[in-house]
Length: 206
Image 1: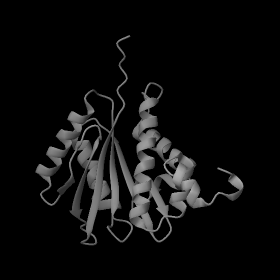
Image 2: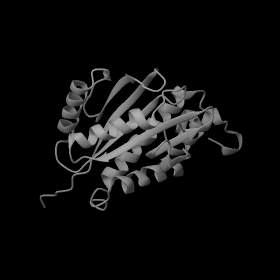
Image 3: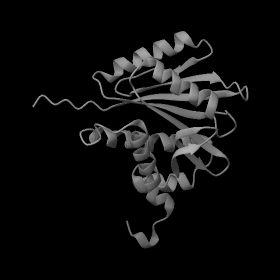
Image 4: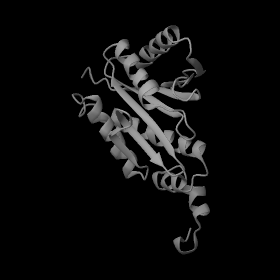
C-alpha cells in the first residue's frame, strides 16, 4: 500500500479496527448508533488496559480509574471528560456533534446498595433519553474474585427491585456485561444502560 495514493476507504479496509482506524471512523460516523458502536469498542480496550495494569492501580479509587479511562479515550480521538457537571458530577462524559452525549457512572464495588446508588444517579440525575443521549454505562470496578458471579447477582437484584427495568441483552461469557432498558422519568423515553464489570483482582499465588 502506497500512502501517497491511499484513500480513507482503503485505509479503513485494512486498519479500521485499530486505534488509527477507530479515530477516523469516529470522525466520519454517520449517526448516533455508529458512534455508540465505536465508543463501546474503545471502552473495551480501555477496560482491558486497566485489567493489564491492575497491580499498579490496586489502591486507586473510582474517580482515579475513571480519569484514566477518559484520558485513554481522549488520546484515541474520542473527546471524554472526567467529573463533568451534567446536573451533578458524572464520572465519564463523551460528547460529539449532533448532540451526541454518552454517560458513564463508575463504582468500585463494595456493596450492591452502592451499585444501586450508581444506577440511580445515571438514571435519574444525569440521563435524559433525548435523541443521541439515550445510552449510558454503569462501570463496576471489582477487586474480588469471580467477577461474572458478582455481575450475575447485580443483574438479579436490579431486575427484582426495579420492575420498570427490562433486560435487553443477557451476559454471555467471556463478555462481562449485560444491557437494560427503562423509561426515563424526565423525558418519558427509553434509556439504555450497559452494565459492565472490570475485574481488577491481583492476588498472585507466586
